[in-house]
Image 1 (cartoon, rainbow, N blue to C red):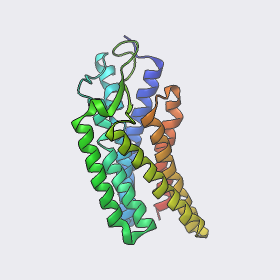
Image 2 (image 1 turned 120 degrees about the vertical axis):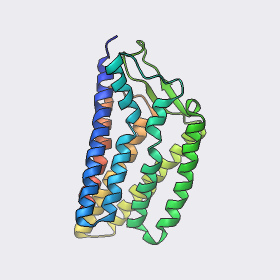
Image 3 (image 1 turned 180 degrees about the vertical axis):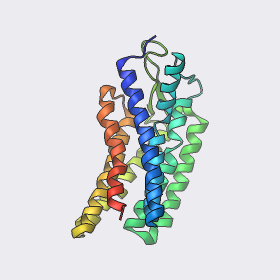
Length: 236
């Protein structure tokens, strides 16, 4: 069976997010070494992990192109391929935000999130089918990609809501407040950083919790724009 139009949109945009995330992240890491900027190095890691958060869709797309059928998702592998990268993504993002906003507390805050994200990883590995809603293609295998999002009522879903809310409130809002309290070039940098963090959180939230159809295009463009704003905030 032929892949539907929405299947092509889903696969191509997911491929773009994975490739752009890995390429941009590697570039940021390269620049961090030249500039001796540790924060930019961590932003590079965040960008790579954010791109890999679409690995499940990307792999399913490649398998459909190669075999005409979807990946065997009887064990929930599609969800796991994507969500295993959420933990390092959030922990490093929290570390970067703490370093910039309240550096004296960064290790306390990062340690708390490290523990919470470890629990999240254990939960999704122990019960992937209970942690995610999987929607197989309505037209049969190979007509579209497997859609998936977190079950809000599952333990993993509750953790995800906490993480997204924390990212928005702590990284986005706190950085925005810091921008308001500063002036000149420093204000501009904090505004860019806050914008990047909001883009990550808001579009990531939309992607994780609902079926988007053709809205995948602007949502995924918005999602991958996050690290670009963060890079311009921290490149100097």
